[in-house]
Length: 175
Image (cartoon, rainbow, N blue to C red; front, side):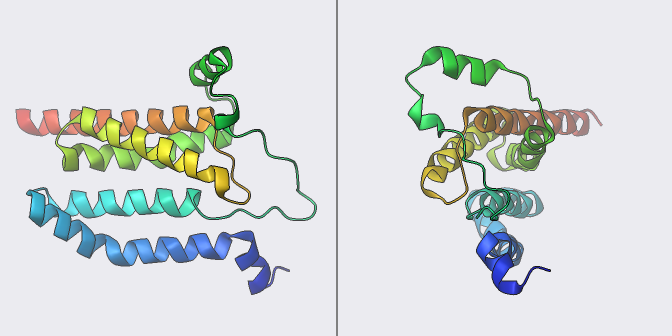
Protein backbone atom coordinates (compact mmCIF):
# COMPACT_ATOMS: atom_id res chain seq x y z
CA UNK A 1 0.00 0.00 0.00
CA UNK A 2 1.28 3.46 -0.90
CA UNK A 3 2.20 5.79 1.93
CA UNK A 4 1.72 9.56 1.92
CA UNK A 5 5.46 9.89 1.33
CA UNK A 6 5.25 7.58 -1.69
CA UNK A 7 2.34 9.58 -3.14
CA UNK A 8 4.13 12.87 -2.55
CA UNK A 9 7.32 11.49 -4.10
CA UNK A 10 5.42 10.24 -7.15
CA UNK A 11 4.10 13.73 -7.83
CA UNK A 12 0.46 12.68 -7.41
CA UNK A 13 0.00 14.63 -4.18
CA UNK A 14 1.68 17.70 -5.66
CA UNK A 15 -0.59 17.59 -8.72
CA UNK A 16 -3.65 17.09 -6.50
CA UNK A 17 -2.63 20.03 -4.33
CA UNK A 18 -2.08 22.19 -7.42
CA UNK A 19 -5.54 21.27 -8.73
CA UNK A 20 -7.15 22.13 -5.40
CA UNK A 21 -5.39 25.50 -5.33
CA UNK A 22 -6.53 26.08 -8.92
CA UNK A 23 -10.16 25.59 -7.99
CA UNK A 24 -9.82 27.86 -4.96
CA UNK A 25 -8.33 30.74 -6.95
CA UNK A 26 -10.20 30.23 -10.25
CA UNK A 27 -13.28 32.28 -9.32
CA UNK A 28 -11.51 35.32 -7.80
CA UNK A 29 -8.85 35.41 -10.52
CA UNK A 30 -11.41 34.77 -13.26
CA UNK A 31 -13.69 37.49 -11.88
CA UNK A 32 -10.79 39.94 -11.72
CA UNK A 33 -9.82 39.26 -15.33
CA UNK A 34 -13.44 39.30 -16.51
CA UNK A 35 -14.20 42.62 -14.83
CA UNK A 36 -11.00 44.23 -16.04
CA UNK A 37 -11.46 43.20 -19.68
CA UNK A 38 -15.26 43.05 -19.91
CA UNK A 39 -15.52 39.30 -20.38
CA UNK A 40 -18.17 36.91 -19.03
CA UNK A 41 -17.32 36.00 -15.43
CA UNK A 42 -18.30 32.34 -15.45
CA UNK A 43 -16.54 31.57 -18.74
CA UNK A 44 -13.42 33.39 -17.56
CA UNK A 45 -13.38 31.54 -14.22
CA UNK A 46 -13.83 28.22 -16.03
CA UNK A 47 -11.03 29.20 -18.44
CA UNK A 48 -8.71 29.99 -15.50
CA UNK A 49 -9.65 26.64 -13.92
CA UNK A 50 -9.03 24.75 -17.19
CA UNK A 51 -5.60 26.34 -17.66
CA UNK A 52 -4.75 25.67 -14.01
CA UNK A 53 -5.71 22.00 -14.27
CA UNK A 54 -3.61 21.64 -17.44
CA UNK A 55 -0.64 23.24 -15.70
CA UNK A 56 -1.11 21.14 -12.54
CA UNK A 57 -1.23 17.90 -14.49
CA UNK A 58 1.64 18.66 -16.85
CA UNK A 59 4.13 20.75 -14.89
CA UNK A 60 4.42 18.60 -11.76
CA UNK A 61 7.09 15.91 -11.46
CA UNK A 62 6.16 12.36 -12.33
CA UNK A 63 8.67 10.19 -10.53
CA UNK A 64 8.78 6.66 -11.96
CA UNK A 65 8.39 3.78 -9.56
CA UNK A 66 11.22 1.26 -9.22
CA UNK A 67 9.42 -1.34 -11.35
CA UNK A 68 8.03 0.90 -14.07
CA UNK A 69 11.15 2.76 -15.00
CA UNK A 70 11.62 2.98 -18.72
CA UNK A 71 13.90 5.59 -20.16
CA UNK A 72 11.84 8.49 -21.55
CA UNK A 73 11.98 9.19 -25.26
CA UNK A 74 14.16 12.11 -26.27
CA UNK A 75 12.65 15.55 -25.66
CA UNK A 76 11.43 17.18 -28.87
CA UNK A 77 14.11 19.87 -28.59
CA UNK A 78 16.70 17.17 -29.38
CA UNK A 79 15.32 16.58 -32.88
CA UNK A 80 13.73 19.91 -33.73
CA UNK A 81 16.21 20.37 -36.60
CA UNK A 82 15.18 17.10 -38.31
CA UNK A 83 12.22 18.39 -40.32
CA UNK A 84 11.26 14.91 -41.54
CA UNK A 85 10.88 13.66 -37.99
CA UNK A 86 9.06 16.84 -36.93
CA UNK A 87 6.63 16.56 -39.86
CA UNK A 88 5.99 12.88 -39.15
CA UNK A 89 5.24 13.62 -35.47
CA UNK A 90 2.92 16.50 -36.30
CA UNK A 91 0.94 14.72 -39.01
CA UNK A 92 0.52 11.23 -37.52
CA UNK A 93 -2.92 10.44 -36.08
CA UNK A 94 -3.35 9.81 -32.35
CA UNK A 95 -2.59 6.16 -31.62
CA UNK A 96 -3.19 5.44 -27.93
CA UNK A 97 -5.48 6.41 -25.04
CA UNK A 98 -2.92 8.84 -23.58
CA UNK A 99 -2.94 10.83 -26.81
CA UNK A 100 -6.75 10.94 -26.81
CA UNK A 101 -6.59 12.11 -23.17
CA UNK A 102 -4.24 14.92 -24.25
CA UNK A 103 -6.83 16.06 -26.78
CA UNK A 104 -9.59 15.93 -24.16
CA UNK A 105 -7.44 17.85 -21.65
CA UNK A 106 -7.28 20.90 -23.92
CA UNK A 107 -10.92 20.95 -25.10
CA UNK A 108 -11.99 23.12 -22.11
CA UNK A 109 -9.07 25.50 -22.76
CA UNK A 110 -10.31 26.05 -26.32
CA UNK A 111 -14.00 26.08 -25.38
CA UNK A 112 -13.83 28.61 -22.54
CA UNK A 113 -10.98 30.45 -24.26
CA UNK A 114 -13.39 31.12 -27.14
CA UNK A 115 -15.54 33.21 -24.80
CA UNK A 116 -12.61 34.90 -23.06
CA UNK A 117 -10.68 35.81 -26.21
CA UNK A 118 -13.93 36.45 -28.16
CA UNK A 119 -12.63 34.51 -31.14
CA UNK A 120 -11.87 30.92 -31.98
CA UNK A 121 -8.53 31.96 -33.46
CA UNK A 122 -7.51 33.67 -30.21
CA UNK A 123 -8.49 30.61 -28.20
CA UNK A 124 -6.56 28.27 -30.50
CA UNK A 125 -3.52 30.57 -30.49
CA UNK A 126 -3.55 30.66 -26.68
CA UNK A 127 -4.01 26.88 -26.37
CA UNK A 128 -1.21 26.21 -28.86
CA UNK A 129 1.14 28.69 -27.18
CA UNK A 130 0.32 27.17 -23.78
CA UNK A 131 1.18 23.65 -24.93
CA UNK A 132 4.43 24.74 -26.60
CA UNK A 133 5.52 26.51 -23.41
CA UNK A 134 4.54 23.55 -21.21
CA UNK A 135 6.17 20.94 -23.43
CA UNK A 136 9.35 23.03 -23.54
CA UNK A 137 9.34 23.46 -19.74
CA UNK A 138 9.01 19.70 -19.32
CA UNK A 139 12.62 19.42 -20.44
CA UNK A 140 13.68 20.17 -16.87
CA UNK A 141 10.93 18.32 -14.95
CA UNK A 142 11.60 14.84 -13.56
CA UNK A 143 9.56 12.16 -15.27
CA UNK A 144 8.28 14.47 -18.01
CA UNK A 145 9.24 14.39 -21.64
CA UNK A 146 8.03 17.09 -23.98
CA UNK A 147 6.95 15.74 -27.33
CA UNK A 148 5.68 17.03 -30.62
CA UNK A 149 2.82 14.52 -30.51
CA UNK A 150 1.69 16.12 -27.24
CA UNK A 151 1.85 19.56 -28.87
CA UNK A 152 -0.15 18.25 -31.83
CA UNK A 153 -2.78 16.56 -29.65
CA UNK A 154 -3.10 19.46 -27.22
CA UNK A 155 -3.47 21.94 -30.08
CA UNK A 156 -6.10 19.64 -31.63
CA UNK A 157 -8.00 19.70 -28.34
CA UNK A 158 -7.87 23.51 -28.23
CA UNK A 159 -9.11 23.63 -31.84
CA UNK A 160 -11.95 21.23 -31.06
CA UNK A 161 -12.97 23.22 -27.98
CA UNK A 162 -12.83 26.55 -29.86
CA UNK A 163 -14.97 25.08 -32.65
CA UNK A 164 -17.54 23.86 -30.13
CA UNK A 165 -17.57 27.35 -28.60
CA UNK A 166 -18.00 28.94 -32.02
CA UNK A 167 -20.95 26.65 -32.82
CA UNK A 168 -22.58 27.45 -29.45
CA UNK A 169 -22.07 31.18 -30.01
CA UNK A 170 -23.51 31.00 -33.53
CA UNK A 171 -26.56 29.07 -32.36
CA UNK A 172 -27.17 31.55 -29.55
CA UNK A 173 -26.94 34.44 -31.99
CA UNK A 174 -29.58 32.84 -34.25
CA UNK A 175 -32.02 32.22 -31.42
